[in-house]
Length: 412
Image (tube, rainbow, N blue to C red; front, side, top):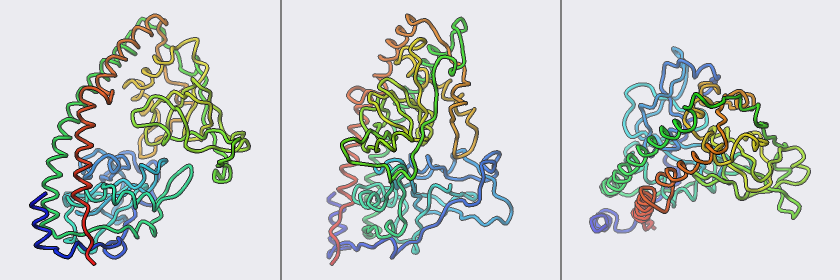
């Protein structure tokens, strides 16, 4: 920190200038006029929603392709562009950023669910500095306030462009990037080790759950009731704080890597509930949004919108914990993805889920498998022990120093 303090005293003794995004940047929209077919056998790379959401820096070699014809007018990304995810089901996850660190070696496009922020003076901010700045709490808090919505949260670009950011001298930016890169490198090494453990777990779980040829296999819809959720519209009309409101379950109500739905942030009126789909405690819900095909077990009675599928009446064939592991397993997830089709928006409808063949072993075997997987799952997912705990501690340390390094005294 002392070197940064010395640089600031020398280069910005009166403080660091702050600018609204509107003063120094413009927005660039993503792909337009594309259909689902354009994302099959594409000829040009594009940045998917999940690429932007998951990475500080855009992964330019991700295998996401779209058809772009000769002379077609689409915006290409450039070095220094900050990709912003424009919508989400959760306020906490809205407006995640990913930066184009290097000039693309070939044309690189952006999906229509995101937009890019482009600085008018490309020398104003180092791309490496932007990747940390736009993920810092001081900027993310402003971005969250620029969004609104109920079922789907969307950024208002006019409000977004009022976000104020610090622009310290380049030498200060460079030193901050050097320090934070060291933190993220350590974190990346831990993440790689944990990911290797999880792949090992997924392989082992897949063998336990789906690889026994002597086990009866049936279509899932023959042993469970699978139905799509439903949304009363306009949903704003039915959201309520009244005492007779009932839980309205959204993806944002489930913690990352969570298993259970234990509550809901919002409620709908009884009239809204009558136009929706009820789930009971013990029922499963399956996501068809960002966490595509991810199962959750509801511990509450509530109502789900049409971005969810509800699964019930499986008790005669499955122990709940076994079904949870089965639906999460790589073979089943891969089958969901294959049947849902290619492209940026996959459609995991009830008919697809009903048609997938699943094994139905004896209850005795199911409980044995659950006991084994519970122990293995704790090793790779329990945040209180082992690698997940160490990674969590590193991440908190990084976030603390990131926010401290990116907090500046504003020039008067």
